[in-house]
Image 1 (cartoon, rainbow, N blue to C red):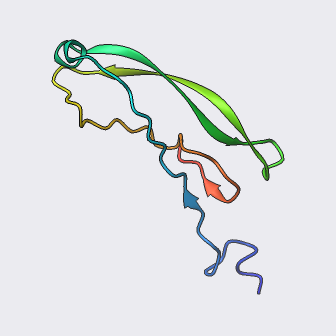
Image 2 (tube, rainbow, N blue to C red; image 1 turned 90 degrees about the vertical axis):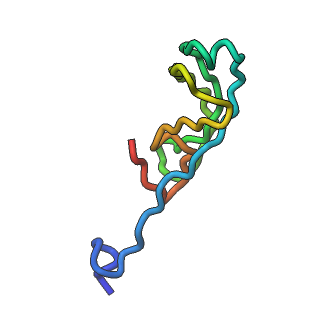
Image 3 (tube, one colour; image 1 turned 45 degrees about the horizontal axis):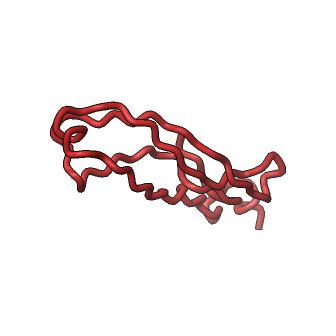
Length: 90
C-alpha cells in the first residue's frame, strides 16, 4: 500500500524522454571537410506546474566531423519532448 507512494518495490519506473528526430541538410562539401552548423527545432517542455507543456524553440550547435555520411545520426540524450512522469536524463 505505502510502497508505491514512497518509491518502494512496486513503484512505477519513470520512462526516459523519447528521442526527437530532426533532419539536417548538409552539402557534400560539408560532409567531406567537416563544419559546425546551427540546428533549430521545437520541442515540448514541462511548465513549472509539472502538468502542462508548451513548445520551446531550441538551438544547438552541431559539429559535423570529416567523413560523416548522409546516414550518420547524432543524438543528444535528455533533449526529447517532455511530458508528466517522464525522466529527464540531462
